[in-house]
Amino acid sequence: MRLYSLLVPVAVSQTKYRFKFLSAATVLESASELVIFDTGFPDGEELVKKLHGFGLHPDDFGWVFNTHVHIDHFGGNHRFKNAKKVLSRRDYLFQKRWSDALLKTRNKLSYIERSFPHLPKRDVEKLIDFLVVVQKSHFRERYLGDPDTLVWVEDKPEIPDWIRIFHTPGHTPYHLSFLVKGEEHRVIITGDRVPNRGQFFEEQKNFIEVDMDRSKAEKSERRIRRYAEEGKNSIICPSHDRPFWFRGGGYLETNPCELI
Image 1 (tube, rainbow, N blue to C red):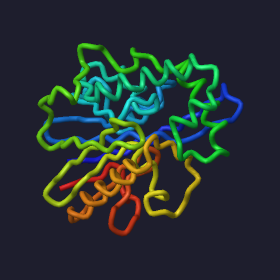
Image 2 (image 1 turned 30 degrees about the vertical axis):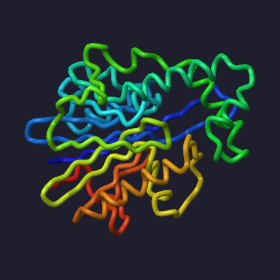
Image 3 (image 1 turned 90 degrees about the horizontal axis):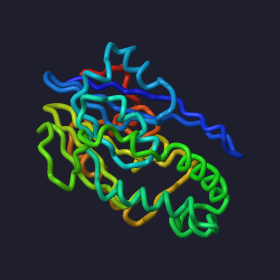
Image 4 (image 1 turned 90 degrees about the vertical axis):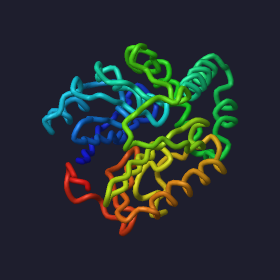
């Protein structure tokens, strides 16, 4: 099996504050399947360019797995026309209702503070600025992909047998993570439960915390750590950073990385 890491720069400039960050997608290639976990922001062709750089094409993928329905995680789904898109129906419906309510409410400050009770006061205004623009301009059902290709986890679909879905609520109520177990390696795709390496090892705290339920988020992170501890060579694939080794903490040395 081969693991590819794709980091795509995102810049949101229609806001009062300028937002720049990296959105990560993880590709796993087995002998018979080509799979991508999360597909980044909808704007631009950067994700496709990254794939082409590895000799890959969106039409060759059989599966897309989404950790949750935030636009920087499902925005590129529609580019993978032949792939089945696996995501949570409950997460989609929750996010749609939440987004509609945010745009309609007059008191957006109160709405954000209720939604993210642990968000530091200094970050509330920034988050409102970002979310209102992004939800209004980018939260579109068409970015999920053709409805005929959507596969809901609640329906217990048949998926490649080397991929395990597990629930990691906290960031959103129905957030998902994915576990891939090989003979020697274990890969955990965490979505926004682990945004980057620095926060996982408590080395930095400069990423805006947007957990909707902190206690559930902490429980979910403990579950991820437990799964990682059970593996001999566990790799963590965060949502806004490169993959790194659970033991030792170093980033993967090669891209793509050959796994056993």
